[in-house]
Amino acid sequence: MMLCRIYMIQYPICDYNFALITTIKFNKMITINPYLNFSGNAEKAMTFYKSIFGGEFNVLQKFKDMAGGNKIGEDDQQKIMHMSLPIGNNHLLASDIVESMGQTLKMGTNFTLTAATESEKEADKTFNGLAQGGQITMAMNKAFWGAYVGFVTDKFGIQWMISYDPKK
Image (tube, rainbow, N blue to C red; front, side, top):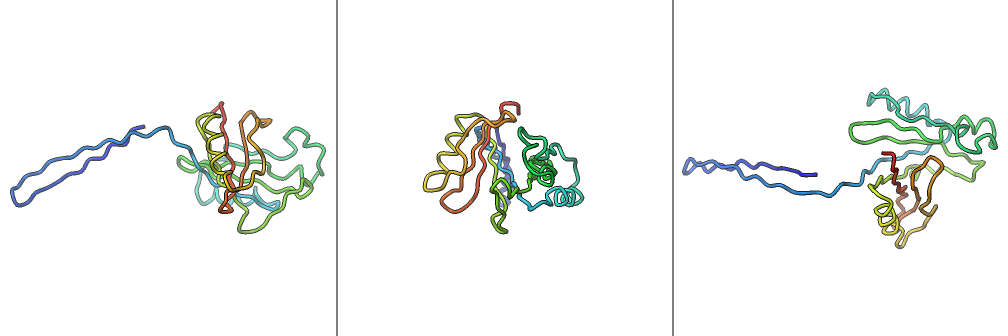
């Protein structure tokens, strides 16, 4: 990826103008998106955000749709496991917590930053860097939907989900 900047420089004393063009080369960048957690009202909240930001949901999965989803209570089966609303080049992501699965919701920490990487190697490097002095919630591993995913809380208390999805 290249960023090109053009600076127009004008010298009024001698009536001389010139353009300075600089280019900066970037490696492919990690994409970071917010992941919001709700207590049973993720779909309602995301529908509200959709009414504000526009667009269409590109993912809407309920817990009943996951492997073993039939083993949880009927109310929990209807909760949102994963929902995504594209906004510009990013996504607003959301899910409901399921207390019967040991999840809890605490306002103020009910979000996770997601970092989508370009490779498993980059995912491991990012995850291990954030884990230094932090706490691993779930080590990097292959998820049932095919992505390579891990969860960690960094040493500053920020929750992260690191992922690499070879299908994207």
